[in-house]
Image 1 (spheres, helix red, strand yellow):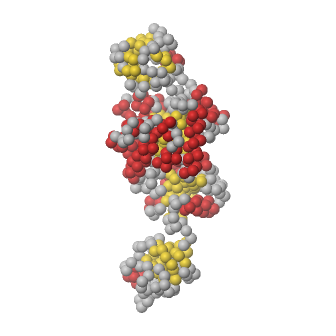
Image 2: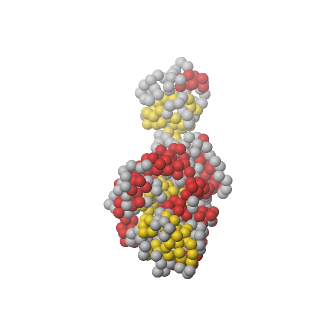
Image 3: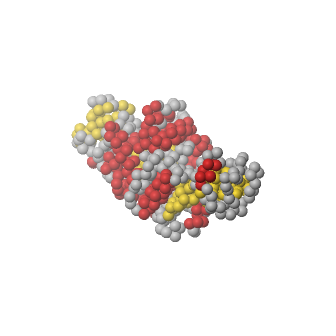
Length: 545
């Protein structure tokens, strides 16, 4: 089962195909406000939710706001060549959508257009800005502009962002573009609070300023996205791999999701197959610690949107096994972190079939996820917003349960739903972690181990095989024979299992019988389970139905 999550940008390419998109592997739908109208995005939002409900899969939605994005607003020169001198400013050859930027440009600053396809250097200001073209090309309105190393004095939230936030306030995540510092997140949070909006905030890191302030940014955000397009323009390209690893490491340390975006399967916008380099890039991003990978043009406007998701899902599933950790690196900190450490370690030590997290805030599941355990992670919560938010975390399968009052009750409900959905089966050993319902939300304060099913008896096991079948006291009439005692003169034949009620038995005799492939459980005490279907597990020393 794939553990790395997939974010798909919605656009014309997937309209009417949401069912296929989700089935092929989409976990989170992204709405890119840089393109399209509010009405158009709302239509896709509704279509995606309907398809998600129909599929029965837990998915999430993400609104990507533009933030202080710098673009070409108008240009009188549509083509420039190396050596040309162009003017930047009001009534200049190139006009920008934020005129306040003109005041902070100085000679020597580089101005990059369209992801660095065009590069200019400011040579003088008198008072209009004169820039020499270092790399030429075609210039058009709405093309993105980067000024590496310069703090842009632009208010973080733009009017278009506010409009989208008002109209799409029920999304699970808001991806905040061009976050420069924690003050940008505070501004966004304040606006969302006024709207009574509770979406999680993903800070998109797209410039050196964001990288420099990552400690404060990640502290106040709910996750980060390494947006490699603009980031690779703002910083030297050769530094991008190191920065990617650093940012994902920071996300893991803080127990928050880290996303890798831009050019994941760029070639599949036009071609039915990816490049080998893209496949390796995907695997390396997962090995670096990415919780999720985001497709942009591939699913929004590409020729092969469904195929892109399907291929990414296959590659990610293979890479996940390499990302799984076989040993625990202890993460010190709060009580919740210590208990989460213990849960993961216990699951590995006993080779548990699943690790079930009972959570009201999602924190425990995120803390468990950052260990990247090979054990499947299930997260049960009574709150839809928590369940949908966990659709973004590596390895977490979230699902809804009814509200709970006591620990025993919530465990029972969570296991029943997990069994109904096929996440666990009778006989599975589950490590359970969570917080008492009456404790503070976000606090993990218990861990225990439980078997799925009703345990009938425990005893000392002999043999290797788990045996399932009918139990009775007459040999040859059932799969598992129930005996009050056993000695060397009475050794049942043609059975697959033996249960000995007495605690007075000869271990050497039982070991000898078990070498014939018969599983044995001894010392159970008197049982009243004749002619019932049961399962005998000699390794765990239990019998259950």
